[in-house]
Amino acid sequence: MLKTLKDLFDALRPPEAADSAQNQQHLLQLATAVLLVEVMRADPELGAAERRAVIAALRDKFALADDEIERLLELAEQTARTATDYFSFTSRINESFEMAQKLRMIEHMWRVAYADGTLSAHENHLMRKVADLLYIPHGAYVHAKMRAQQAADEG
Image 1: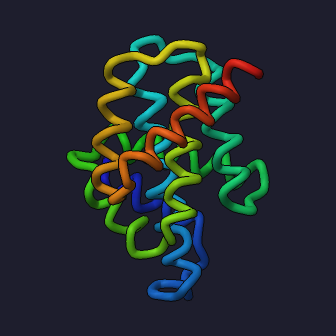
Image 2: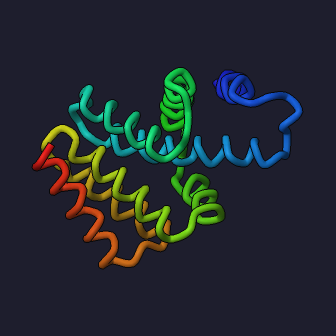
């Protein structure tokens, strides 16, 4: 299974990019996508609305073509199924994102959580855990949640 994940990831990047900035960008994209997918998976009733919200978040966060987003989403889903912690993903994000970027990502995660119109206890717990790992101040966390909830109510 890990070999399959590595093969899929390798297909997303050119061979000469082993330790390049482009490789680091791919790893950051994967870390972001995995956390978005984890919110989607936290809902006991997985639906198309959450998947659309993840795709919209990836499209907003990274300038990727539709086929690249689909491949990234597929890899993120496979990675999320085998992941044992969130730290490996949040640490990469902490290294690369400024606070404003992390806040935008938390808001995207909330939008995924609210995509189906309800917030499960598992989604809420996951969001709090990830926000703590990203060192998001509680006030900013609450504001991101309220913005996402308002967008869901309007949308």
